[in-house]
Length: 73
Image 1 (cartoon, rainbow, N blue to C red):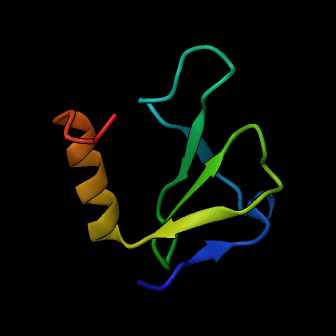
Image 2: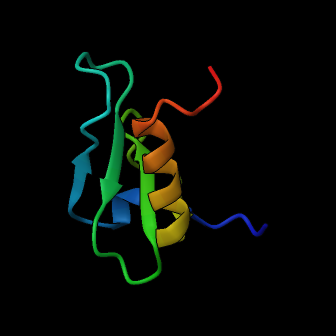
Image 3: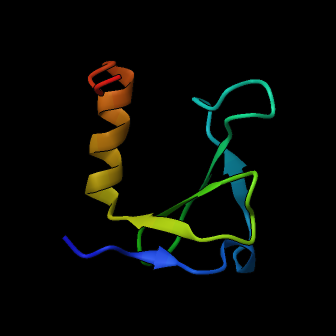
């Protein structure tokens, strides 16, 4: 598997907080919709940091697993 990242996530506009993020300020995941190369995901506490870039099928599989509570804890 090739790791795909965007080194400076702040260069992209239109981030939204994931509905699965924690309601307090501690654990916030942000997602960018409609990116041409995949689905960028970043930690909201580090907006200038890197974003991981998931393939659309990979992201969809991850979301399905989260909804099904199928991830190891």
